[in-house]
Length: 515
Image 1: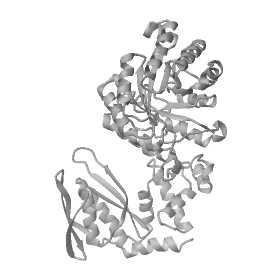
Image 2: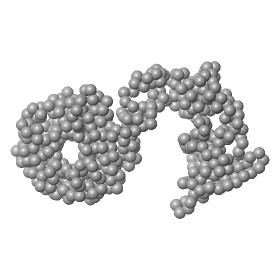
Image 3: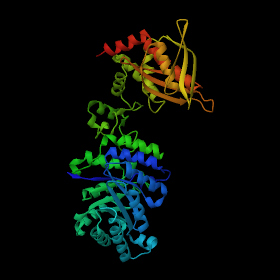
Image 4: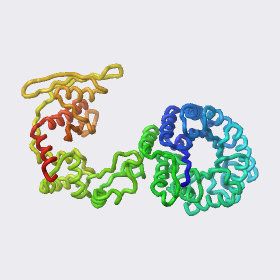
């Protein structure tokens, strides 16, 4: 199989997305993760553009090992000098020079004739070659450039030393049925094309950046320029994760592979989203929140019988723990019973029927039914948990220069017990104190806080899920003080764990009924 080079431009073109400005240390953090992801080339920035970009490229060049580090430059001496200086510490470096070639750019932006463009492009590559063996040239707006002129420019810059020639669809104008043949035309009409790698850089203005990139690969491109989460100028760039996973899943068609460790995709996506402040849309392919979630009853039934009925890739392949069957009004009885089993309940058919009817009523009222809702439904069928422990008093201290500490007093059978413990924060300190007082140390599986009223004095509700000796329980607590609400929720769940009637009911249903 052909090995496709993944050129990541998240830190250069991706950062051009409005509102996505990154500091040099943030760029360095993302670059390190891109190296773990396994990208071949990291374009760190545009050094002439700002002191921050120069610093970022230099930091990446100094500290990130493995990938080739690239920097962008216009076909001007000052740009190329700045790129070379920033890249100096890198063991593997590439200077990426560009110059517009399309008629509209020549006339209105550059005001230069074809002959002038050709001379400047050749000079820029030759000049960059003095600083780096690896030089990439991009004829900006190539997809709107006359093919014959484009062939001429590419042939001359390769002769001048370009090792990669990048074909940008700068404004997302191309159509796959045209862009693929353009790449094929380059392979057939540029005499020395074998001396360079053909690259593509596609924008998403018409939503075709990934299809155009894949069409280019199918027609001979050996490198694709892309960004994590598809971020970038205007509507963004070709999405790295979509291209990589398409090549992985459809090896049968493309006969091409990459060096990407796909299990790092989700981690990389979340890091880029967190540092840029740009959220990933839920229905985004591969990394969206809904990419591996199924709600339709028909789909859920198929998934339970054989995963491949409705999933063409494993969530584990991109770094997720597994698929999720979302319970809502479209869900069926099969998925409902399966989720109850995962929560530790094994109900008789009549119990399932009754619980399922209550679930359907609830599902009509809210978009998604959570595990805590299911637990509440089923617990109504179980003996009520005794309130073994009651919260009497909670006091916490915390601050930037203070070790978070919680003091808690509980009442049990008319007697009060008190203890204190330190933690990573006031909530953690509360939970450790409760563990000491109750002699139970469950695993905190989930913690969720939300406001249930409006205003500065809003009532906050905390929902926790605990796991202990194979039993999972949920607890709720509400208060205008979120620390108190957190303690109440945790203690509510602990009471269920220590209640003999609740534990017997859970375990008997889990072990005895309909094994």
